[in-house]
Length: 327
Image (cartoon, rainbow, N blue to C red; front, side, top):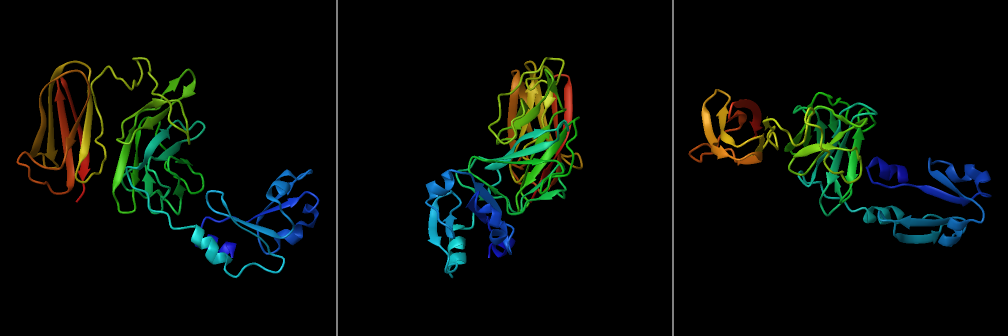
């Protein structure tokens, strides 16, 4: 029965518990199954706390609450399978944005990893979500992976049921998509060390990141300030970020950093080079800036899906990046 439930992706486990004096009869415990068996050493604290006797069966729900205790010397209850299924109500699908890439490590030492955080209030399923280091999304498609509310999924490169695309130490992206094809991406800056520690990069739910001490599977640590001759999360040079999310529909955020007060012109063009809209054309003070674009042109008309370019001219600095509007 347990094997049948597992084949349907139900999160069930069969575990045996016996006094250490019982384990000599192990063959009687594991005939026709591959259950784990735990030995309770003398003076048998677990056995006594449970008030157990031989051939007692205990059923616990996913939160560890005891649902059923019954001696099964005369046989297993006919409705046991239905009882177990009733305790495992289908979990809702995760919501992209509530689950997001919250940390990544690109050094390969000891190994690359990607962390996904569930900021929502409910446990949810990542089934059908995809993860890759490019927009092709042909690396990892999640099976029935449950991520608890406030919890994390951490995948290490080439581990079973994890991603296989290496994250480049010179900079990369991570694309995370739901089962409907909506995606978010984060930009990884070049790998950095601080006092011999290979730093990771942590991200908030808007995709803004910074260098951090590696903390896979737990709350991200504070941003690390690097010296000015390295890739500083508070840069002293002009910087244009990749828009987030990308691809997007219909809104995205374009971020940039100004080291000084200067005149800024931020313009979006279609792939043929025709100007679609001027988002910014003004003097701005120094610091981090962000501008929203909702996929419309200067006349407020919604533009078709496709590849667009955004160009920033800030003082003597000019940079251009690509983005994808989905329809």
